[in-house]
Amino acid sequence: MMQRSAHNGHPPMLAAEALRRQQDPIVAVATAAGRGAVGIVRASGRDLAPLVTAVCGRALVPRQATLLPFLGEGGVELDRGLAIHFPAPHSYTGEDVLELQAHGGPVLLQLLLARCLQALQQAHPEARLAEPGEFTQRAFLNDKLDLAQAEAVADLIDASTEAAARSAARTLAGAFSGEVHALAARLVRLRTLVEATLDFPEEEIHFLEQAGARAELDGIVAAVDATLAQARSGALLREGLHVVLAGQPNVGKSSLLNALAGAELAIVTPIPGTTRDRVRETIQIEGVPLHIVDTAGLRSDEQAADEVERIGIERTWQAIGEADAVIFLHDLTRRGEPAYEAADRGIAARLPAAVPRLEVYNKADAVAAGAAAALPAGALVLSARTAAGLDTLRGALLAEAGWQAAPEGAVIARTRHVLAIRRAQAHLARAVEHAAARDTALDLLAEELRLAHHALGEITGEFTGEDLLGEIFSRFCIGK
Image (cartoon, rainbow, N blue to C red; front, side, top):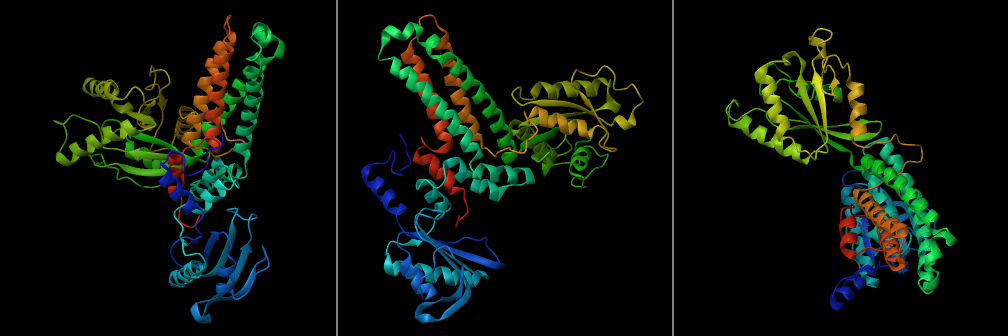
């Protein structure tokens, strides 16, 4: 069952109010705040003909840009620009839409916005300013976009790398949704077969063999696994990887941050405790954003120079707990020193087991050949000063994140998509168990298939609660 109405889960009074607000004509400035060459005011709602006449002075040819004066109250010309009228249902929102492309001065746009709202309210007293994401939300509710495509609108705007922008555009075009719909269609066919067989219990024993249902189930499982891998990579493109540089003072954390960023971002001195607070920088590797955090060197409170350094160390441990991965940096020039090795072991014991860790040995340029022998398995050796070994570290970070080189058809995805696919995966795993049992209970198999189908439907919005919709669209900019 489709659950797109905004009143789901609300008492009748609240449901009626939510439904009414969805039908209010809305208007907003659709371009970013500040000065620009062009600014757009957008309106959406039922029957915008009175607005078109009031502001443009005449009716417009549908979907054709028309150069004309924009009229204020009393026919005073506010500006001259392009007006485009998109009659329902052939518009972005599925409602009547009017876009006014004016000069991009903030004062002018506010005057034009106020005029549009005034004209709208004369014909529709309930007309109001749009809320964040409300135009795209209406596109979703009117079946112009599914939920994954609607989210891709915001992802395309927020993309921090070229790869993320290209992938968001493909998701907006429906590439990711198409894969999810294809999986859902396969599940529906299998569910239909299983549930039809429930009406003929005498046939249950031979059901899986005769109908080829087990092979189809295995095929669906494999397809879901592939989609999960793609979604994980898509989520990385969108959200990036949060990496913390950790280690004792003077092991080269700030030098490594500077080397990775290709700029002198952090102060580097031989004085222990130079870095007092977290220094953040976002870089990209193969189009994947990496949010690198340089932190204060870790040592005991007794060794800290002052209260400021002690606070910095506390913040370092906080950052480590929030990280997607930790680069635990060691100093090759001090390898073998008892006190130094003991301190490293103490840090290692405190690092969260759930956070992936890369053991990295720095200052390879300052030691003799062979000094890096007998390091722990998987350890990386580099020089932040000469950049030797940095490419290996970059590759290791992507591998630790589970990144697979993005093909040309890569799509953007979100963490909620990954979690939904994992839920579908879990239900399918239980379905496989039921299918493999000697005394197969088809009702249990049917229920797991239904739950897997439901989880996939959450991605595109076929089964979505209002709370999730509110969370998603509230993060959009106003006018989009």
